[in-house]
Length: 255
Image 1 (cartoon, rainbow, N blue to C red):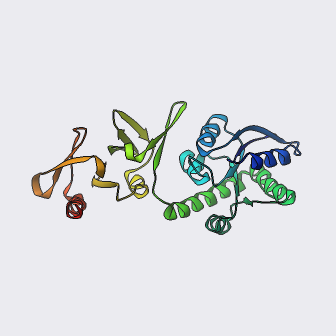
Image 2: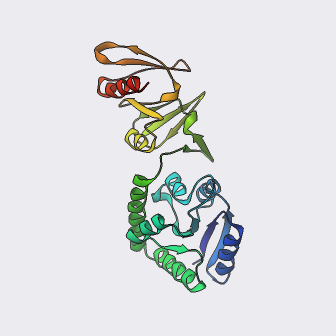
């Protein structure tokens, strides 16, 4: 079996080392190399490799953000590569997810590669690995900083929308619509998932179907029964619900 492999690391010497070690393996075909997280997302979605060596510390998007953007269910087998990072290593160890700690020996590299082969050959083990990866990502998401950009997959394009550019977010069944200036993007997330990942100092939920960027609020008008009509700087009008009115009251008091 040929294992189609992707290397994602921002350091050229690190990529060269992985490439040199992989060239000694007859069943490995290196498809591409990436120097940042954004490239990694694009290449994984386009090339669909079997295996990816994924650096944690990368510009644009780190390794964990790459997995968030693609989704655990769509990820190939992953071998994380990292310099010493106490938090990341603890997460890997707790959830039994394989990683290479720089600098690593050729023996340790082959051990990680052999484990990847085993997962690729055994569907049950592969499912177990994905469950462990999902548990690890949930663990990491609870500890991570809030999103500063939202990844949008549209046809053959991958867009990165900075949260500061977002006017408001609207629920649409199991999707949300991201309204940013004249553009509207649709992503497969629930409102609850989006609310957890957005900075509460930057975004406020005013309705079960609406989250707004606080910086984009131009005016609040009293509505019926303690509700408000929220008017954004672009003229968009959104009615709040009584259930979320306390958040708007707190916003008014803070200012």
